[in-house]
Length: 266
Image (cartoon, rainbow, N blue to C red; front, side, top):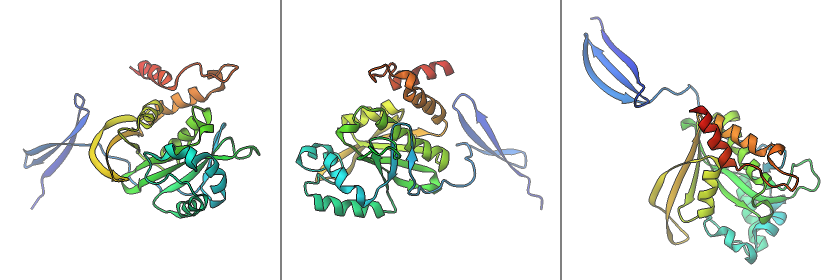
């Protein structure tokens, strides 16, 4: 018996989707929309490597960073930094040190310490933390989260470059197709940061989780691999020394640069 079943994959330019058409004996049996094929293989799980930039370095979290980090992130004066975080605030330095030791060994979340400058600079010190979490290599998606930055990093080139380094590493070295950002929908600074950095808002997961005894609705954002080239170019133009005046003030905002690039593509 000859199997004369055919399956065709047709592209719909209007809806930017694919249609699978199954033909049996010359008769169309079904037509169903499907997504485009992805490259074979899977992404790599992140490892504890250092990521170096012009203004900062991200280094794997180590318990030796704990005391320096506590000065910027711990104690009562920094309690407000932990309102929307899963843990904290950390008022006791010994508890903080123990927590950092646990975090530095986690396999499901890879923590990085953000330095105030490049690691080869003797004056660079630990001033913040970021991580990769919700790591799913088979599905080629990964999240950037557990971000907590000391005051020394606020509104600096180093802070923006730290995000750039993490996103770039995920797409270009590890092979992910989607980088996620999630935030409590009440955390306005985090929502603004996501949009400024180029993440696209996807919606709200209502009553997504209970955090510190309170209901949390979660805002979801992402950057995908096809969006990354333009987002990357905007980052690099913003980080360029030509984008800052003699007082270190930005000339063009990151979001404005990205919007101009998007207009050029139309």
